[in-house]
Length: 297
Image (cartoon, rainbow, N blue to C red):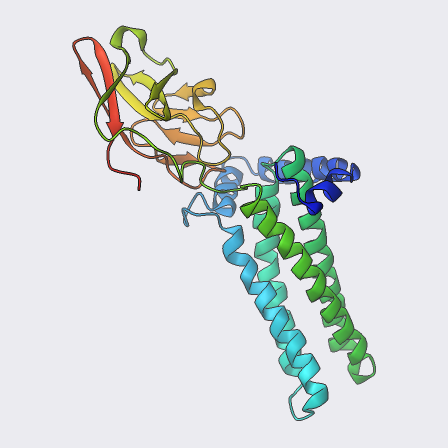
């Protein structure tokens, strides 16, 4: 864990743990109540389905960009009165629409965090929720309050934007300092030529066996008599897949429930969004050998 000033500050905020647990229970209950459609929608919100890439970061630029335009237009109106106040109003509204998708995907990703990572994610989420409330109030004043309260509405939007930038900093900290939703196999190294990793007799049907293929930890299993090998590291948060469970040709990570096909490493269920590197496996003279199907770098 990084030891920056923000980490030290957040570690001292024990109340974030209680808030984080409540948020996770609400999010889990909301998706769980929908059954199978809920699991699909949760995968969409993570980015597992449709996009194949974390969705939340792609959506956050929409509200922040629109709100920046809104505040800039609001302030320019005082210098250039011919600039209609409607420019800022419309941009503020667009930002709120974008914030809805950003909030849903953000709190969905929050559901799969714990420890210090969850505390940072909770503070990030609470700050951005506060921003949405400030922007909603600002928009309401613009629509109902008229010109008499326009200055107050502009002030609320400006304050919201500043808080939003702080929240965005925490979002970046989650990704770049703590590795949230980062592909844990991005820098993996593995053998480009076959290397022996186990005796064939050691890998029984349906078993999950951990072996080492050079610098890469590898999961071996046998499905319908055929051997398969995938990297042992879950791409979502680095969970050890060999400690998970196998159902048919799909292994489930023991940490957050991401599911991968052992035949090709493809993601079958979130929160993981990135597939695993593909491995070739063969049996020769009672030995199991594996190598990367293609170079990683």
